[in-house]
Amino acid sequence: MSPTTRRVLQAVLYEVCAIAFVGPVLGWAFGKPAGSTFLLAVALSTIALCWNYVFNVLFERWESRQVVKGRNFARRLAHGTGFEGGLTVLLVPVMAFWLDITFLAAFLANLGLLAFFFLYAVGYTWAFDKVFGLPQSALDTR
Image (cartoon, rainbow, N blue to C red):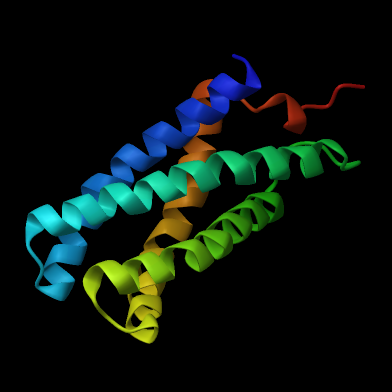
């Protein structure tokens, strides 16, 4: 599969599961109508989808220049940390505005989501690689 197809498939499948989780949790946590938090989940996932693609392009560019190939646990943790850290910076303002809460409250809410999604991102990427194989950037081409 081409790198672009792989990235798009990986990101879309990831976000479909994210919407199904985030919408109901935000509605419950903030006492907001399900329709509103579902739309927020779609907005957050759209942002995450775009970030996922951009981040993976950058990560794979960096990864292809590394001497040690493959994706060990440390590299997977670096991937998850970089992705989720950047996503937090992007999502907190959106959550604060949409839910009409402070940036601190949005940040704290995002921490809860971050804890779940950090583990989810590492596990999901591992499972995706098992099903679809490693990208070219992680293979030893010598």
